[in-house]
Image (tube, rainbow over all chains, first blue to last red; front, side, top):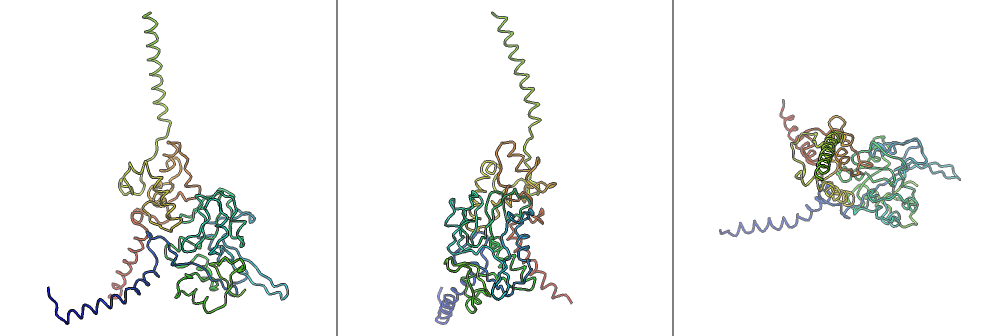
Amino acid sequence: MSINRRQFLGLSGAAIAATALAPGLRLIELAQARSPEEATTSLHRWGLLIDSSKCADGCTSCVSACADENGIQSHGRPATDAQWIRKVTLKDKQTGHVQTLPLMCQHCEHPPCVDVCPTGASFKRADGIVLVDKHICIGCRYCMMACPYKARSFIHEATTGQKQHAPRGMGTVESCTLCVHKVDRGDGSTACADACKKEGHQAILFGDLKDPDSEINKRLASQQSTQLRADLKLNTGVRYQGI
Amino acid sequence: MKRPFLVLCTVLALLSSAAYAADDKKSARVPVPAFKTNIDKGDKCVEPTEVMRRDHMKFILHQRDKTMHEGIRTTRHSLTNCVDCHADTKTGSVLGKEGFCESCHAYAAVKIDCFECHSSSRQAGVTKDSATAAPSTVRALNIAQKKANEPAKGMNP
């Protein structure tokens, strides 16, 4: 097989174009949802941005959406019922200004719950989601004491009617999973964020903190935001605005 | 000397036959496991039957750690996949007297912990056809179907 000068130049041009384009294609591939066979990587870090000025007083649609999505049932005993997300009311005593915000697991980069867990059940996934492996949780509740946000709940009673994607059972600790089953499915949202959007408030935004093109990252770069108890230097994955 | 020996033999023979008779009655009282697949996919499980009978717990344990810690959600060895296929058609569950998991675990006297936390019921919407394909495949098929339908709609006058 012989090729003339024109063909050679054409082929070389195509090769150069392919080399130049390939890294871009790779980036697009990374931004897309991974397949079920692929493990999570630290190329992503999932988080939430919550604008408390948009959070309506008296609205609890994020709380009920979370309970629906994850099959959390109330036993009518608020002191011991599981709470993955709760509405907190803040009042400035001097001015009387009242605001509300949803509070859940803050998915810290340096989670105290993971530090204190004696069995390794409390752990952080590569993509920054902090979870409890209930297979190895012994229910000691050290993590509940260590968490500065009171984000975790202990399951006191035998549980029935769990969702397929959210196993939960007596004698273990649990908390917000950042809808990990939805993240793994590539939904790109959480139940609470969807519910808030549906209500028209749009106070909760879910996204990838490591993706420079994500909406959450753009807003964090251009607007002021706060970490709760930033003095603890936990580098939370959930950020707040308007507080 | 001979007579007592004969008597002994007869007594022994009678006793053993009585024991066999008792065994026969007992076997009818002990419920035999219900080995059945309720969604009709033939006799083929995700691994050969002999392997599954001996090693199903190993597959589930391995999958459990992969899913929990690495977010790998393949369906081949997942507990959800077991339940979706083997759940009883009437109760929709793998537990209960006739349940695939519970009947065998009761027979073997092995405690089954999975369903204290995990759902023992088939997922809503899982049918004979959709259970055969992994959810991702179903999604891909749905998208392909939509794409196939769209131009057809546009072509109509």
